[in-house]
Amino acid sequence: FRVEDGAVVGGTLSEEIPQNEFLCTTAEYRDFELRLQARTSREDANGGIQFRSHRTPGSPEVVGYQADMGLLGGDPPQNIWGALYDEARRRELLAVPDQDGLAKVFRPGDWNDYVIRCQGRRIQLWINGTQTVDYTEPDKKIPQRGLIGLQIHGGPPSEAWYKDLRIRVLEE
Picture 1: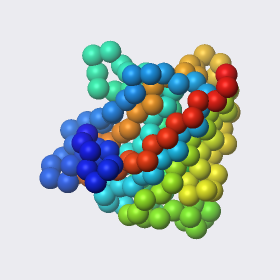
Picture 2: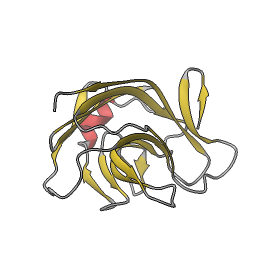
Picture 3: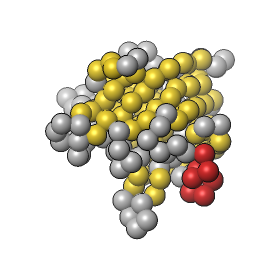
Picture 4: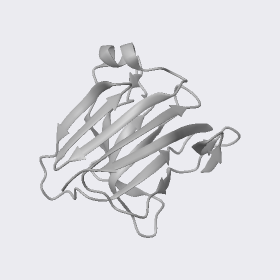
């Protein structure tokens, strides 16, 4: 990760990215609203914003929720901007935005406003002012507190850009 043009940039366009990489807070958050802008260098680049996450000892991996960015392979590919993924735990998409609705607001290759709001077991995501996810965690064993992190996904050369990050802690 590096700072370029006032943004935090994960990844590189000059070589393969050997594994997922994360730049995480040292503080843990439970109930909060995070606002930021994000973009990727290529349409098929993959990144995301981790939250309520924990580092895995002895590994670069983190475990927790991820507000996703990118395309998921398929024919046609599925846009997963504004989707909720469970990184390294269940390893599955928990909620996916309506593709037609997302296509109306998503700006490929440009900055997109991302909002992540967590209160209790409820997780809400917005892209460019349009809500993409309203999810309530049914598993009471899953921690609802953790780190916030920025991700670049391992794979072909690519970059995930993040800027104007603002967090507001909500009353617990």
